[in-house]
Image 1 (tube, rainbow, N blue to C red):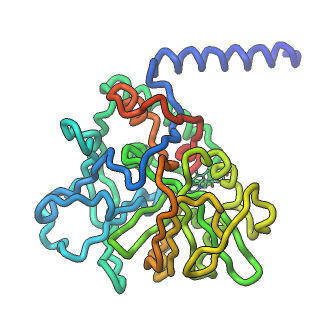
Image 2 (cartoon, rainbow, N blue to C red):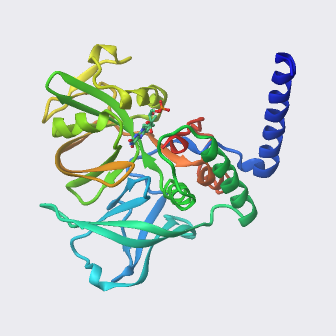
Image 3 (cartoon, helix red, strand yellow):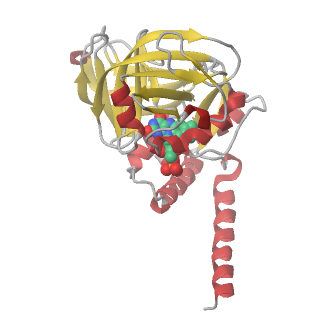
Length: 338
Ligand SMILES: Cc1cc2nc3c(=O)[nH]c(=O)nc-3n(C[C@H](O)[C@H](O)[C@H](O)COP(=O)(O)O)c2cc1C
C-alpha cells in the first residue's frame, strides 16, 4: 500500500474510534482527570470507613499509597484491626444534600506501619463499585479505559481492579500541590496529587518508585508542599516533567519563589498554603513509594478556589448534580499516565 493510502486508512480508523467513543460515552465523554477549583479543605465528598468498629469519617485521614498494587493508607490510633468484621469497606459519599453513595471499595488489610504518631493501616482493594453513572455507561467507560491501558506506554501496568479503584478514589477531589525539595546541590519542584493528611500532624505522599524525584525527596529529609490557586493550575501541570529530572535550577521556573517560613525551602510566590514536612519513614509498596512525614508548620496564606483534580466520571456526576458552576475543567490525564 502506498504512503497516502496508509495515512488515509489510519485516519479512517481514528475517525471511526472517535465516533464510537462519542456514541458510547455520550455526554459523559470527559478526560479521565479534570481540573476543578474548590475551596480547601474540600467539603464535597466524604470518605467513610465501615466494618472496623463504628463507622468513621476518614476523609482527612487517608491517602492513595500505591497504584499497583492499588493500596490505600488510613491513619488510626483509636481503632483496632481486631474489631474488623467481615470485609471492611471504604465509602465515598456526597457530603451534603442526600448524602448519596458514589462508590464503595472492598478492603483487605495488607500491613500496619507504626510511627511516632498514628498507626497507619494499609489496605488493598478486593472489589469496587461505582455509582456515579448508570451500569451501561460505566461499562462503556471501563471498556474505553481498558483500551487506553492496552495502548499505554507507561511503565506502570494497572490491573482492571486497580484502575477501577483509582477511578473511584478520584471521586474524592484530590488537591494538587507543588512539592519543593533541596538535597545538597540538588533541588526540584514538581506537582503531586497522590497525598493526604493522616491525622492533625501526619501526612503521606506517594512517588513513583522509578522516578528521580523519589531519591531526591528521601535524601532531602524535608519538603514543602504548596497549595495552588486554580488559576495557576496550568503552570503547575507543566512541571510534571520534573519528576524525571535529577535536579533543576530555581531560576528555570516560570515564576519567582520565596523561602518557606520554618525550613527556608523555596516555594512559589503564589502558594496559597505551605505545609512543611519532616520525613519520618518510607516504604516501597510497588509502583509507588509511600513517604510518611510529620507536619512542622502548616501556613495558610490565601483563600479562594484551589487546584483539585477529580475523575471525569465523577465530573459528569458533578455537572448533572449542580456542583460545577461553569468552572475550570481541563484536559489532563494523569491517571492514565500512572
Ligand atoms: C498534576 C500532576 C500530579 C502528579 N502527581 C504525581 C504523584 O502524586 N506521584 C507521582 O509519582 N507522580 C505524579 N505525577 C507525575 C506523573 O505521573 C508523570 O510521571 C509525570 O508527569 C511525567 O509524565 P510523562 O512520563 O508522561 O512525561 C503528577 C503529574 C502531574 C502533572
